[in-house]
Length: 152
Image 1: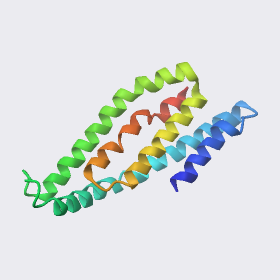
Image 2: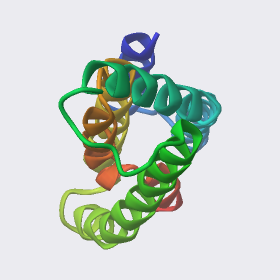
Image 3: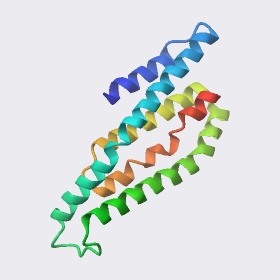
Image 4: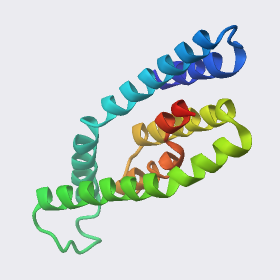
C-alpha cells in the first residue's frame, strides 16, 4: 500500500534521528530500495492502464469526438509514447530543481518532498479514469529524484 510506504519513508527520514552514520546510510538505502521497487512495480502496469483507458474513453466519446486514428492499438502506442516522453521531460526539468532544494533545505527535507511527490504521482496514477489524468499523474514526478538525494 502506498500510504504505508510513505509513512515508512517519513518515519525513517524525519522522526527517527540516526544515532550513527551507519544508521543514516542504512535508512537511506532502505528508502531508496523501496523507492526503486515502487517505480519498477508501476512500469508494467502503465501500458495496460493506458490501453484500458483509451478503450474506455473511445467508447464513451465515440459519437462525440472524431478520432483521427481508427486503430486502437495505434492510439494506445501513441499515448504511451507521449506519456513516456512527458515523464522524461519532467525528469530533465526536475533534476536541477531537486539539486537546488538539496543545497537550500538539505537532504532530509528534500527526501520528504521526493518521496511525497512520488507517492502523490503513484496515487494519481492509480486513480486515473481518463488518458488526461495519466498525463497529470506525471507532474508530481518533477521531484522524483531519490537517487540524487541519496548521493547527497
